[in-house]
Length: 370
Image 1: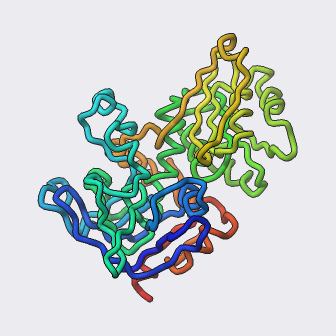
Image 2 (image 1 turned 180 degrees about the vertical axis):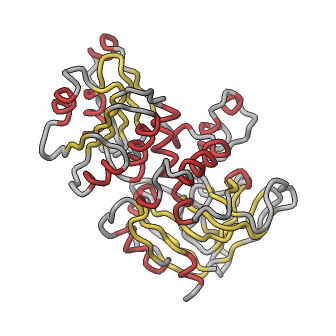
Image 3 (image 1 turned 90 degrees about the vertical axis):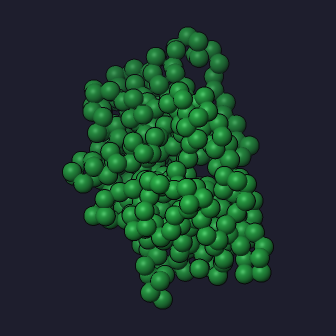
């Protein structure tokens, strides 16, 4: 099959023929129909997020089950599935506590480059190993993944939109709904109106927030943020966003601040924008080695809650069908996230070129039609 392979940090991805082994007993082979290009893929390609190489990137995807392993019982060939990169064992202490996204067996291995048994199903034509990305590697015609990375969906659900649920939608929506637990009437600030941030905006809106302030330096995100539920938009190049948030909230600050940009300056401002007793949720991905400095005296005095959000605190088997249902009923936006559709051969335009809208989606049906 053809796949986009990263051979070195900062290098172009090479679309080439690779060998894909069949699925193991607890694995599934999926024909990829659509794959989103996420900022984490870009960070890995540039070397900001180290990963074993060579690797087939991609961790947002949806497709059709082609083959199942001997121990797979809940999936059948022909089923449509959304893929996700947060499998869980169901047995460790964190899984038993309902924190399956933090599974102590699998979460630490997400960037390890292999499947559960420590080996890879991807190889060069000469037989050398090629690593997986986040258990998935969706920048390819097919993928072999653990069955727990698959969530079956209705065949009427469009797969381009479905592919985005597997990362940016769930991460942003879940940061608001699962982690921050936005309550009706809340004031929410979201730093960064990219794929994760814009879904934190609409998650907050669906949860009933009264005021949602989106912050982003790109003016073209203003209208989009409002479409997804933002009531206000601030450009940090034009205003002091902490002062502006205070002005918009009668001096109190926000009940909840969600930092989705991964920018260290924005992370510090996010803490300052929260009110006394407010909640600050960090979900943006930063380069390895980044440090965050916060003022120490207010921490005990003002009782802000500081927390991270990994994959939006998701339970994919529970949350993905809910998100699909919200979309199908017209309550959650997905079509508007798809800014550009490309073929696999155009992958470097998406990885190395300027950001276009919210999400570039690779349509693998174009790849098969070549």
